[in-house]
Length: 123
Image (cartoon, rainbow, N blue to C red; front, side, top):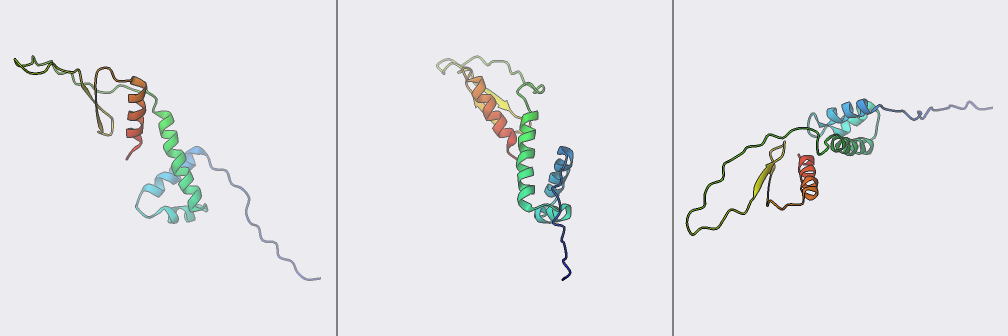
């Protein structure tokens, strides 16, 4: 009878959401460290990229339309000069990351919220 060696291929590991977020944050700490971070934690790069995608989705879930207050700046209306066009009722909305959207007063609020969520997701 020959000697048979059994190699343990490892079992499926479970990571908590907090641990996944910590590993994702570590992978973003310096450019080009994704593969190094994945090796350090014993996961594949594709798994780490999937966790990055999930982390972005989790952040969008946390940011609900009524998650907090947005600072508003009230500017008094200026009387139009004689012969000029009347004001059209536009407003400028500035997101938390500094992106600006200018809309008319009859904007579809649901569409505007979708646009703002998309802009917030951008880096």
